[in-house]
Amino acid sequence: MEAAIAEADANDTSRRFRDAISQTAPGTALRLALDMIIAGHLGALICIGDTDNVLAAGDDGFRLDISFTANRLFELSKMDGAIVVDKGLTRILRANYHLNPDPSLPTSETGMRHRTAARMSLLTDAMVISVSERRQVVTVFIDGKGHQLRSVADIMGTVNQLLVSLQSTRTQLDRKLLRLTTLELDNYVTLSDISQTVYLFEVLMTASEELGNLLLQLGSEGKTIAMQREEFIGGMDEEYTLLVRDYAADSSEENAAGVRRRLHETVNAQLRSSKRIASILGYEDKGEDSVMTPLGLRTLSGISVVREGMADKIVDEFGSLQQLLDDIEQTPARLDRVGVENPGILADSLYRMWGKRA
Image (cartoon, rainbow, N blue to C red; front, side, top):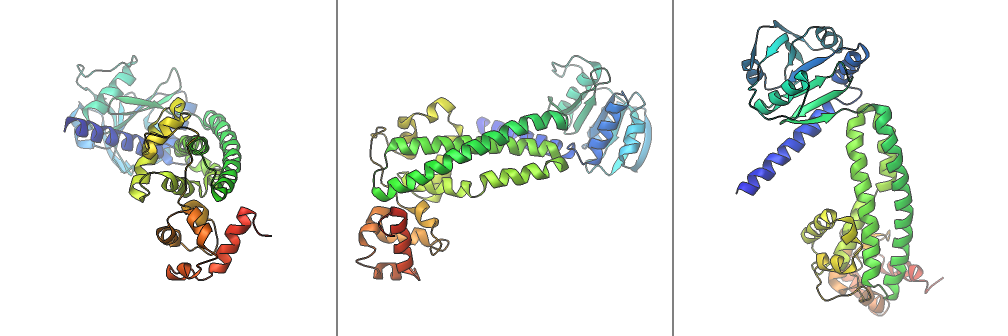
């Protein structure tokens, strides 16, 4: 029970951090105000949300209750105290507000403004932003943890590296999948082939995930990057799941989701271990040279005449890709039974992929 509560708290903190990053991303009114404060060589302490508890932790200041704009937030930051804003970023409620959080609340921050921000984020559910006048950096605090905002130029340096990695990995993966399809049709797939393919999928998905986090920080500046990311990752998520279902001991979609989660949590070095991959797929007695027989879901789903959901029915009928190849010409009626409208075209497509027909 305690572990479940801790996990729920961690998930809530992670969600709130993502919301905070989204609210402070370039293109938002709040980010514009923060950039203006930095450009003006000013400092600021801004509390957003949970206003009842925030106000209970301080006193004095000016009661405003005016509509929120970037310019107003910038002008009010010229005063020493905190600025209190409602959760929806629609109203500025207080300015020059003197906060007095419990000094016994733990924090590793050093500056007065940052210590106050960290403690206020522990004391309340507010998003607390501290702008350092001396260091010219913006830090967002949630539950006592700080996240320093990065400039667009700084983020773009990392983004460009990830895009190069995505492009290179996608090229390698496309080649590996093409070779894997050939091996599947020849019935020569080994565990080593699957392990290498899984490794490339995980590299691609990890780079895409990291790029997604950076896109959140880029806000409106990341539209072109998002399009490039989709170009590199498009269709790969579904293809990865089909690969897992093809080779896992349990081919259900539910198990595939669990397998992918465990693969994603596996450290990089172990992802290169065929034995570790086999264990996650549900096998304990296979070595890297063990022959693996695919169901054929991935290969069948790539054929135009196989409609969505039809690949599962074909596999249920024939059992495996190799059995389908053995029977498809002798017993085409079996394909009619599962609803394939053009069994001849399906057969031709498979045999062309196999290189057995011009």
